[in-house]
Amino acid sequence: MNWIEVIGHAGSILSSITFMPQVYQTWKTKSVEDLNLFMMLIVFLSTIIWLVYGVSMHLMPVIICNGIICALSMLLLYFKFRYAKK
Image (tube, rainbow, N blue to C red; front, side):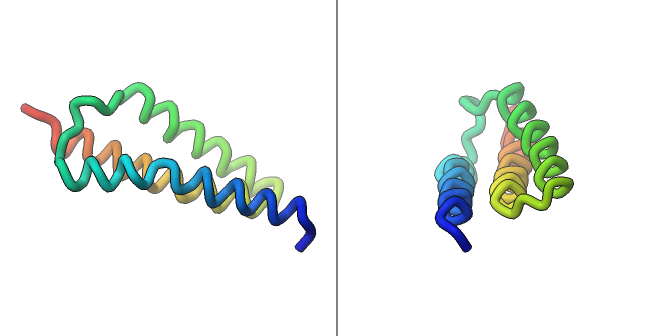
């Protein structure tokens, strides 16, 4: 693995963990009022598009990063509907 690949994987890891604190806090507090549904839908759709691109180009850092972000954004969307005040 060359240094460019290392940078790609490092960026992938850092990008992947950006949603983890929000997912944890939302799960812990069950508070979703401050989560913007439109933003979450955009993130979810963009990760799907990036995943298609990454798979078609065989780019593992893109696949890993967007696979994780996609799963985390799905969790936030689930929380948004599950914990929403009726």
